[in-house]
Amino acid sequence: MKDCARAWVLSNKQFRMRENVMENDTLKNLEMNPPLDDFTNELLARLAKPLGAGFTPGEAEKAEIRDLYERANNQNLTAPIIALFGRLLEFHENSKGTPADFGITPLELEHLAVKHQLIDEHMVSVGGRLTRALPIAGKANSRVEEYLAAKDQEAPSGIEKWPQIEENIARIKSVLKMTDADWNSFQGQIRNAVDSVATLAKLIDLPEKVLESIARVTKSYRMRLTPYYTSLIMPGAINDPIMLQSVPTGEMIDNAGIEIPPVAADHSPARLIDQFYPRVLTIKATNMCAMYCTHCLRLAHIGRKDEMYSREAYTEALDYIRANDRIRDVLITGGDAFVLPNSILKWLLEQLDGIDHVKMKRLGTRIPVTAPMRVDAELLDILEASNDLKPIRVVTQINTAQEITPVSRDAFRQLSKRTFTVLNQAVLLKGINDSRVKMWKLCETVHESYVRPYYLFNCSYRNPQFAHFRVPLAVGQDLVESMYGNISGDAIPRYIATAGGKIPLHRSNVVGSDGTDWILKKPWSGEEVGYPDADREVYERELFAFKK
Ligand SMILES: *Cc1c(COP(=O)(O)O)cnc(C)c1O
Ligand code: SF4
Image (cartoon, rainbow, N blue to C red; front, side):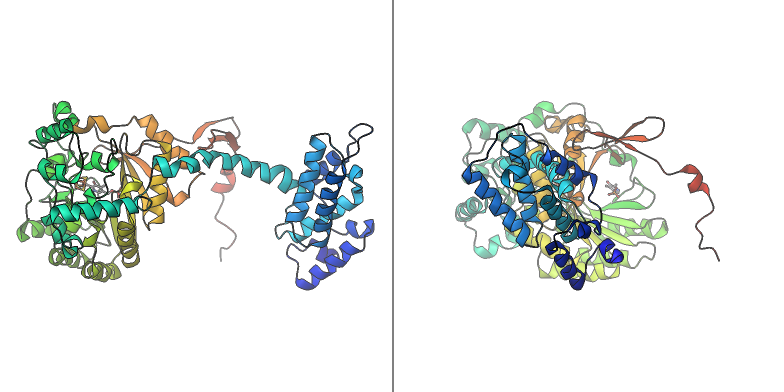
């Protein structure tokens, strides 16, 4: 009986025995059970405390408690017991009666407390759950209330906006005279790309002054939006996050000043190669993108016209990798890696797979959000074949939930099935994702679309053209920290500055020491907790007892 009483998990037979114990309403039986914990003893003592003389609950209240008591007693469930204790506690706290006033004896309550502990697989007590866990959960819930109330208005995703986007698609297709086949092919999207103010003006209703400003800027900066990406712009929205990312604005010229030379100049040990690290490097395999971002770090590299690179250029880059056996991870980027024709992409991947010391590959591309129709069966087959040899990660850039539509989500779903993983490198951009609601919604929507948030870049200081997009470091730190404990851990990006390599910007959570313990700060509440470190002496002792 003793063993059985201590069993954490009760077998059916044992459980039936417990039920019998509960029916044999004796203190002796109660004593055989595991003792109630302090939380429950406190709760029972609190409820038993008299409230002063002469209080009688009303008939309705009595009936309610009687009903709750019957349920708690008759069902082998935890919830009715919690409900009864919860209501009794409420009545008691509002000076409206003790259990005795409702005709419930202390022994009966204790009995129910024991029953709760026996039913619960993890031996959670009624006092623990009611006075500790539920208030703690309630406090935690309050941290996300504001977000849940605001997220779909303040930061709608392209999935939520899909009906409007479908209307936009119909309008754009008809103005550009695109067939379904045009729309659904990458070539059709590129052939019909929006690269002049005149075309843009036909597709989106913009005030004359704005059009003049865009015309002025596009003399100096390249504009290209796929018709698909254009369809994500919400009509009438001021500072639409899609438009801000793709249509150059007057600030770019007004800001332009002394250019800081691109860091790549210091880090290109071979043709097409950028290398910051001993074991990872990038091949900038094209200067083309399906859409040109207004915040592009590679503004200088992207240049003014599309270029196809020669076989010799690729061969020189590959030769550098072949000759350098420290290199283990190679990123094919650009521009945008998915702009490369399948034949070149396949060849590059085969070349890399043929180099023994290259163990992993990455492909940098925004095309799943700017022209998702590029992700077709042939491309997926090429990726899967190479991924079967050595892992491929697809690294994308999504900066707002509005960029994720049912179409791009489907592209990511397919990519995630056929490659190792899909990662997102977002850029922190003023007005686009610099609020809690926008950033949380971005990370959650990305995550729900088979993509893991990986990096959040602070917008670079090197290109004065987009100084107007920059967000202070402290704001970025607050944003990233606000995600801990409130959204899934694998949806939280690392906050990074690019300055001749990627430098983490996270604030340390180890805020000090009280002489004995470290003091750690919880990112979600600021609460500080003591944390005893490993015992140095134990750590330095000989390793384990398993030695032969
Ligand atoms: C971003 C980048 C890498 C990869 O960095 P990780 O921290 O491994 O993601 C490597 N080389 C260059 C030149 C890069 O810009
Ligand atoms: S997709 Fe990347 S490389 Fe191309 S314009 Fe945008 S930020 Fe620049």
